[in-house]
Length: 636
Image (cartoon, rainbow, N blue to C red; front, side):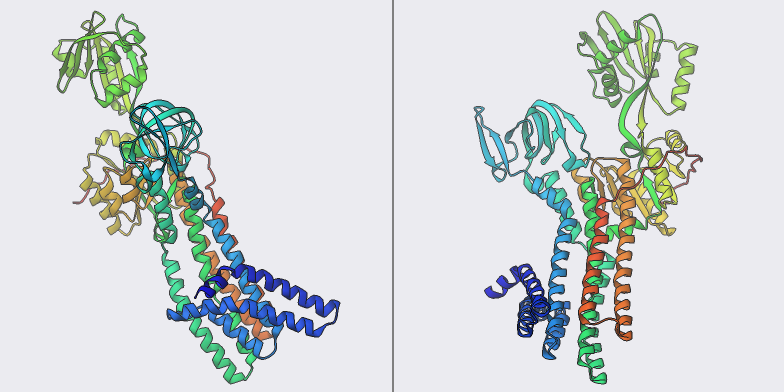
């Protein structure tokens, strides 16, 4: 048993030695006219090549599998029996050399996951209770530990920054190499690199539990998961190999031509057919991982390539998911800048999302003193700021304080609401001062992405949202969506997905992976837009790690290209088998030449699959999207 393992471990070395002996044999024959030397070198090359192949055939037979190696072993024994030592030597060498090339090229296709694995942090600098530093193995770090991360080092864990700030390269998690600025309170991910600054991080997750660890695990599982085409070919090969054995036996008995029967065995090896589809699948999934796209297996590739209907959530998917100040209009005597500072000072007293948008927009470094703060439920906040009475809230707040809206302000208000903005009033000393329009902005790349999806085969683009219908219609019209539906609960969205599937559509649901998880799970393909959130990674079929709409196009195009590549490899493999059989019938193909063509066909399908590693969807110019969306009721 130990001897068998050693032989198989040195299979590649035996292939090289066998090749050298074949070269030496021809030198003996052509250079020295030494027949015995030629014959001896060929016999030795045959034996060295035959042993590892026969061992693999034996191991397969032990588990009741009739393998390709068995076909080659029988063919080599037959050639050896009839004295065709050159044929047996060349066949064994080509088979082993083909396996060597196949191994090297497959390693290349798995380069994405190999690179990820090598990037996994192995050590960390632990900060002790007295501030002392200790370098420890990552396995010794526990949740709650505080770690030091220096400039140029990897973040070893998922955690929260306790002190310090810096810029991190998060390409290992998001696929995007641009720097992310992080400071106290921000989350960081294992495997990312601190380009500048110094951080102390409080540990939340370690090792396999980190986002980076889950990415590696998911990509490994995806590359091992088989598509429908792969499963079909596995079954095909299971029955095909015994069929070739039977055919060779029948031909040998009928024609009494042992050489012909042996040649059928050699040419009947379905190597290119067996390897062609898996290498395409692995390369496609590896390409996705390299660009921050997690595709969970071969079945996902098949299903995604057939999608004709994309259903989108609005907030955080078609929009940025973060309300921002879009327009500020000033009224009264106080300058807009001063009024904005006063409003921001009041909003610091609130945790309302619209208030946070105002704070972000104002970007005030030093706030005036706020006193006598009064939060009025459903209306806003009243406070005294720098000797000014300030009101920040909605129209009800102003009405309750008997502040009248001017005709100009009322007109501006109507215009903002009609364009889908949320509005905030600021009144100072009993007079209107500012009208602030806040909006969840449409992603800048959304229109271009939707156009590209249509060009690539998407027949219907749908938006389902819990937001009001007026806002939904506005977004739908801006982006040229086919159907929009507002005011929906999660169960309503799921019902709509079922309705589309009942109509025969292949549906992909694109959401943030949290509120939309029921629809993501129900759709034929669930796609999560999320920067590595646990729920996104675990519940969807495809995860766009950097929440990039451009990556949605890359993912859709990649799956289509991968499935096409699988079909190309199947055609190449079947075409070569037919070519060899025809060549055998007409007398132009012999054992060694047939084996050469056979091994070259394996190399061709592997190289063809490897082309997927460099695949990128070409960017197309953006055109205005026309069309008015329709609103279709949901059938519960």
